[in-house]
Image (cartoon, rainbow, N blue to C red):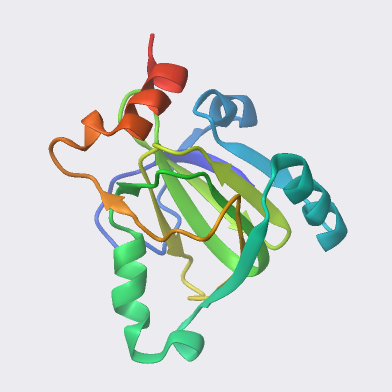
Length: 173
């Protein structure tokens, strides 16, 4: 895992966009982002049990796996949004980036590769993209039935209950 401030320069979202300003694991934790490097599925199963994740599925994001919808889907993942549930991803193969907003509304880019697991809290603004290899296979974990309702950031979304709870817990001064 490597994390840093996103450079905000124009260009392909799948490129590193590394500003040269690193972000430490403790800084990620202060935003509610949990990271683990877990080399075995047995240990992923243990974490899932400890955190009450009862359901899972697997997704492969690539042109080969998704066909014609790949470009549209990757662009939609890159729209800034939040979820009303934790987002848990374990990378089984490939690479990608999760971007999350910091306390100053800057993007923090988190590079993930095989055996990396990330947990984003409910209510955090984020987005996702593959890297320029255009391939990632990930295990998605859920506490309950899978919900795929990204709430794209719009005026008024800051009033969402889950967003307010996130801000209160992690961003309030």
